[in-house]
Length: 183
Image (cartoon, rainbow, N blue to C red; front, side, top):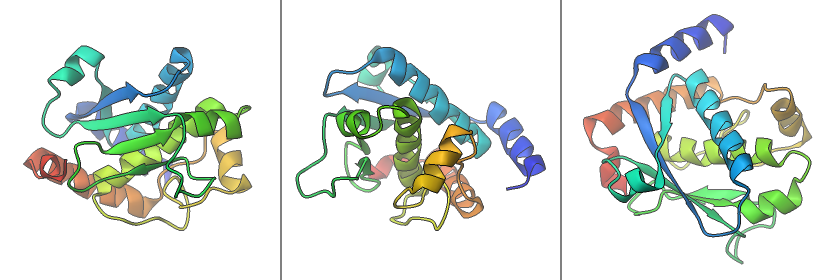
């Protein structure tokens, strides 16, 4: 995406309503690492023209309609491929996103925070798009290779243009009230 387009989307996002995000931990976590990953998520979505708001535990107890819940888990279900970093349930579930915190921590120790933040953004992207799909490139690629991990390290892994478009369409639905029906 062109830098001018990114600047326009970021400017629009600063004035847009925020997507509420709630984080729940089902495993031991490094709170400082989580905070850094949350900053990565916020930046990635600002670049896509979306503002996210991380809610406190107390705020999540009475979360607003359309809040996306992220669960940090030690590992994935046994039927998942070993390299899977998480999954999203964008339709008909009370929980939207599962992130395999322990697996990311063990498999990516040198780039743990980067991979955690990008994995969270990937799964939130599924929920906001509201469709089961992956892209040929960018954050929404189904399997990241050394290229994507390299792009993470230099701050260049972003949502592809088609993903930004689908996220924007999903945001329209969110604020029209239909995203809440998915949870």
